[in-house]
Length: 282
Length: 303
Image 1 (cartoon, rainbow over the protein chains, first blue to last red):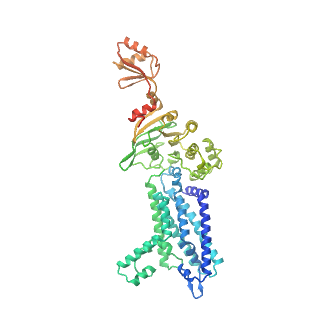
Image 2 (cartoon, each protein chain N blue to C red):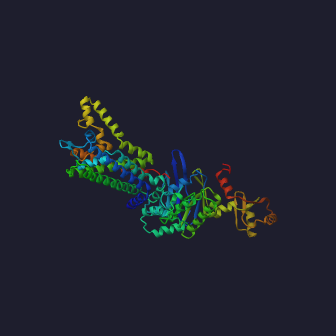
Image 3 (cartoon, rainbow over the protein chains, first blue to last red):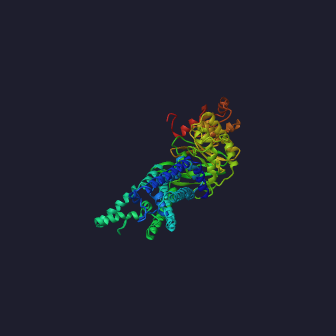
């Protein structure tokens, strides 16, 4: 498994797409930072509210944990980039037929899948760490309302958010591996990143509440996530990811971890299962 | 007989279509087994199953006497080049080899350079695989298949699309691998003339079924020039031929095929007449490998 992992890391290091991705990622981060600096230095507080920045009487307060949300979870462009990266990493050996060279060596495909998945996780971890670090550092340096408090929230948010992101990437890994289609993987990534799935899931929430006889006020609460009605979106990984913040309560934290782990195990298990069952396309 | 690979009624079904239908081949160690068949005959399907890229619907195969479906350690002894070589186009020849070598835990770069030299690609330097000619890609594909030091090399149509020089180079590589390194090769092609220059054993596959399996000698005996003799008494005729010193002969249906001294038809007829054996027909016949193939598969050159 580790040889396969090393093989994929070697390939990634030699691939042009990796360096292109790195440059695009850096450009996105700088553009994001520019946008936030603009927002915080202008009296457009409604925009700050719209992107869920904590506020109190002293003005805008940005906690370290908020930087994760701002620079990762709510950053559609970054999520699309990560999805594209996952798809390229997952499908590249099939696109060029290189998989024939490795699949003929291993009777059990588990090693091949786990090695490739591990390489993807390593690359995504790198992106996550860089983005988190960049967010944190740039907030401290350039955003005046940054408050270096609540590090426990930040650390918790960092790890739970990371687990959630890896689980999402594993879903993209699974779809791409199953369909052997980069297009399918990218479409899924874009649907998740742009919140189209989330909108659909929340619509289902509203329908369930309506069937349950919810009033107009209760429906609003369902939308806001404060009602006690059952919401299917609470168990959908994409919604869990985009809604997640380090400052959430313990119940939501546990739900996020469990949902992420279940999806992760399911996606990885199914990828291995289908790899064992399906022929290698040449 | 020492077989490196045997398949036992290996079958691959896609829906109701049998791409390979109960194929049983026997590949002798150290030889070159030529799998002959037209496009879509089932050659690639068979090779994919043996190479671990496709799961058989039924049947089994053994490599080194061990079941191919269950033995874990067997696969690294098999190298494959099925259809187009699987190469990363933006990598050099060395980087492509290195990528596979890492998967196998091989760290010796000199070994990889040796492989490149063996297939005549040692001077490609920083040239990327996408800039290679088809012949160079095929040779790199063979080098890729050799990384794990296989005892059995499976090559699917490796001479397809090559120019005459490329074909000659490929032939030379195959001879080298078989004779100098002792690698058994299972090779498919529909270019029968080329296959006949390298293979030592043949399997003719048609519409998923193996129609015939024979040695080079057996096949060539059916294809080369011969005296075809028909008489009213085959047993007595054989005695006469033995007395005349003929040894390279075979009885097929109601005829005796003689593969030597083809210019002695007159003498044979006189000798038979002395023994009161009636000669019904005696003629020199020639059959090309291609004709034989069409005869076996029931097709024609225009199919």
